[in-house]
Length: 326
Image (cartoon, rainbow, N blue to C red; front, side, top):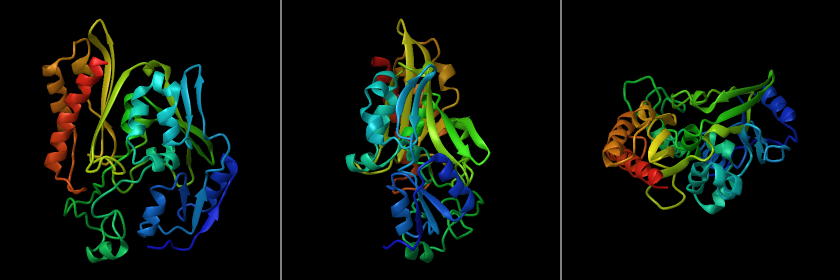
C-alpha cells in the first residue's frame, strides 16, 4: 500500500510548528515517531495535503527534574522513558508501561507525546481502503454506521496507548501550545470518551510537554497488558496500578484502564475503597470486580468483549497484589 502525495513541513521551533498548524488546519497531520501515522496513511485512513515533521523542533526531547516534579518533552522516545534512571527511581510505573510498547525498534522511534495522542483503534476501522469500502465504511471514517454498536450514533473505537493509564495514575498534566499561547491541562481532561473525536486538542494546537508531580513520586507501580503476541501488539486490555503504603496499609492508590474504552480511564471509587486498608486477596478481588465493571469492551478487536472484561478483573487483582508486595 503506497502513500498518497503530500508536502512535508519541517519546523525548527514550536512557534513555527504552531504557525503551520494554524495555516493548514484540517489538511495536516503531525509526524513525531511515525510508527502509527505512516501505517494509517498507507491504509488511506489519513490523506493529508501536509505532514508536519516535528522531530527537529528544539527543546522537546528532554527529561528533567524541576522544583515541582519531572518535566518530559513530548518528543522523548519511549526507549528514553523506559531507560531513564530518574524516571525508574521516582516513577517506575511509567517506565514499566513504556517497556511494554510494541518492540525495541518501534520504541526507539515512538514518542511519549505520540503515545498520548495515539488514534483510537477498531477492527472495522484499521483496515485497508478496499476492506472498509466493502463493509460500507463506519462513523469514524467516511460512513455513518457503527459496526460495533449498530443503530448507535457514537463511535466506540478503543484507545490503546500503554503509557496514558500509567500517567493517569501518576496525576500527569500536559502543556499544549496554540496560536493564543500555552495552556496546561490534567491528562484526565484530555480525552473525550468518543472514539472518532477522542482528544481535546485543537487542529492548530501541539502537545509539547508532560509534567509529573512530585506528590506521586515513589509510588509502587505495576502495569499488566493483554495481547496476542508477546511483542509488537497493541493492548487488548491493560491495567495500571500506583500505590503508596505505610506500616502495611495503603495510604494512597489509583487504578487505570486502557484498551477497553474509547479513552483511558481511572477506576472511580477504587482509591476510596483501598484507603487505610492492608492489601489482601479479598480487597484485591473487590477492586478488581469494580475495574471489570468500569471496562466497556465491545467488538473492536479480535478477542471477545467478555474475555477482555474478565482479563481486566484478573490483571487488576494480580497488579494490586504485586504492587503491595513491592
